[in-house]
Length: 378
Figure (cartoon, rainbow, N blue to C red):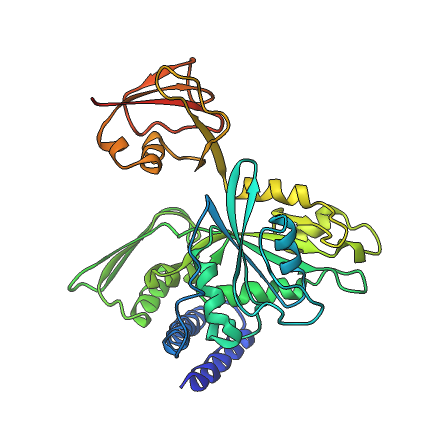
């Protein structure tokens, strides 16, 4: 069954690649994209229903955040994990492919936060279809807050960017969207009346294209509103399926010791497509501290310190939150009764206008380094 679906996907991908993009062919292109999306969903469902599949590797989530390492075999994932966790894990290291055959968790202490790192088996072509333990790999990636894509320099001194392209394609085919967000679309299904399309700003699709694509995705009657400009057919398809995962990608370029001549940062940034990357050498321990700090920044973590009423603040054990978190988030992390019994809090730090400012509400956004006293109802 899965072979037939894969053959059909390959056929449609070839049609899509050979179709020239213009106004006359846009509906045909949208039709092919909709068909591909449905077939890929079928393929993932088939792969996940096979014996032994679908549930990832059964790793218990611990720490303040979770990161997935993903890359082709022998790019240095296991060695990097051992280095970052300072030996507090046991990921087998060897110079041959497919050394890692199960997910290896490790804990990294970074700027007072505890971050769980998961070394996954080397991804291979067809992972989204469940090949090479692909479904287990991708299940872990879907739950991670950050994906570290590991690529490396080749023996000729060039960066293996083809690996990066393939990994991105595999993740995209599995419904994982990197460095983007859910499109601002509103769809209200109705019992009759067809498709009614309204929008804000300039759009790439007209009413006929939207109607055709909605019908192809089995939505016959609905009000469709694009709440931001330049919504693409892919955005609309993702929104309708509703099960996409939006997460961040950070690229680690290992084996910089093989680099034959310095490459300007601007050139690397253009090749990768963004500036969320770092070049390291696990062999020479080069830029490992930089990578640690970059990971902390990419996760948007902050540290807040508790000060029990009428006592000194505990500056040794911060509570780790994320940028944008509120007093309510902090209270829930301590204990749920801190929300129900909350009276007010006093805050010293960036988020307060003056030291010891009083906050009666739970929706105040805290900042990195805040010292907080929480007072509960008696």
